Image (cartoon, rainbow, N blue to C red; front, side, top):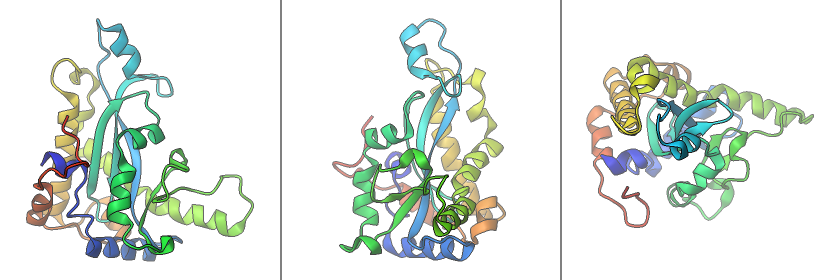
Length: 243
């Protein structure tokens, strides 16, 4: 399952991408080829007590916390279809995108047409501006163009799904975000958070609805069997991290 959580290629097959785009469009989104939402999330960890270098690396000056960071892609069925990381907490989202070589995967699995206008894309917050032709971001917040303003408004109503799914992990598996229990030199916080995310996905598959992303976008997740099948893929040379 290690490689499946990094990027679930089975979930990103073409027939699913078309379903994802079709689910987002009726929800009011003005961009019709979006198939998922990308964002970073932080896992707070206990402050390392002896290693000064580690303290500095994990310290996020914006949040004023010691954290590790992940990059997630959520699809309209509520599945966190890619969870990559961790990286150190001070890493900017756009830098993490580059470090984790996300663009290579997006080009392969979303760029199904030579015509750029017919390719599928993800939608992310302004941190991802110019990160990739396969990641669309909002127009400047101070735009006076009415179409651009309406596009920003419409997309903000659907891209909230990625935040909802971060919240679902914390709701059902709160220990993964319990700072004092997450010790980088002890119980492997990353493994706990990753397994919590996989378990959240499995819970969605079993429930088949009843969570915020489904309430908004009305797309059922895969069956549990289909999800596990996609997660159990083999390593793809040149794509998957061996760490």
